[in-house]
Image (tube, rainbow, N blue to C red):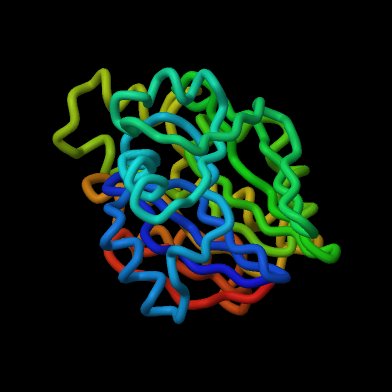
Length: 253
């Protein structure tokens, strides 16, 4: 199994996963043209994608989904509640398949486990992708470090893990008080320190690498996120960064 991030952050999210001929995109928070360009930069054709799987209705995860389906013919997998909330953003689509939060989806030899999260959306999920005994997590928009999350991470071989904000930058930043409270609240996002603590615990089990993901542009900096994880895990453990602005390196699981 291999993967790379097309983009990750509040300006748009999309992650590619490939295994045994199955090609999946998780979320579509960027334009179809940019997604096609970034896939091509890694030798992939967007028209070969097997399915687009959507986590929740926020525009940084779904704004390109309608174009992905209409222009490139990619089937969309989405919960019914998420589709109702995002219908205006997605627009008319003809190939939509539904799942419920917590359900397993099978794409030939690849299994996708959808995991409900406490993020502030209609029916938000994160994902665990499994093939040939190897497991990758796409764990963003988590709300808070909910009870099942450490156990999920400890059973993964690799993970994209939300590292959204630096607490000091958020506290001193320009956001209104209500938005700051929402971000650090039970239905918001994980901080660098929360993400690092989870990673450090999971690194003692089977976890082989993490990629810090969904960084805030205003309330975080890449080096702050990486430093927090290095302090928590140590400098020898592989920590990658899912960029807000560029396609990521191809990573093996």
